[in-house]
Length: 334
Image (cartoon, rainbow, N blue to C red; front, side, top):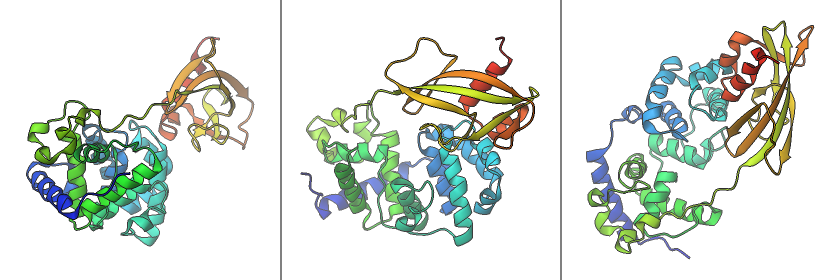
């Protein structure tokens, strides 16, 4: 059972990483403001995406939606279009939903209130409340998990609830006396630039002399690695409605466990134990390995049960690469 370090040890860590951060932090665009909207957009974009890749998307997104009200009143298709290329479109959908709520009631300043909003998990709510409003709470993301595991030589299964809760308590302790808007960014910056997964730059790390895993020569084995579960194999049979060869019918996906709530062609899915030998398309999304069979159904009229989208507008309305793949078969010879 791990115990939290003493207040003296935590204070020493906090002081040294703050000094380092103030001298070495990168001039990232979202660090020039404590505007909660701008911070929130950056934090959501940075999930599953690198800093350098995010910067141009972030700048374009804010140019198109400069305020929370601009985002709230935009059509979801506009949001998807601005998000195209970042992937994980549920993030864009939740941004839009949350913006509509925030525009009515304003930005909550505590993580416990923010977490009630769509898409605001533990990390995002704490990041926004600390970076924008200075709430004395810590964040726990991949970088912070790695930094804390090494700094305090914590050989724990961080993906489990109890262990994750301990890391959260440790991050909270480091932030308890503030300034959390700098401490949290310092921890993440250290993980991104110095305490990297492979070949960490220990000699120039502000915690080099006090890093407990380095003393024990265990730093390259931490944090523990979570074993990846094998992907789920699914057969996806699609019957795509087509009208006059110019528009296609879609419906909100409530039949498949992947790409939930997105507009997709009607179809049915079945989980398999092994991959089929014959299929039209193969596509991977998160933990799913999809084997897709596609049939186009020519319709005499546009049934009201579908949302009909012109072929030229599909990429804007539904910027999913799998939909692009599916519709590319429409012009293929049978």
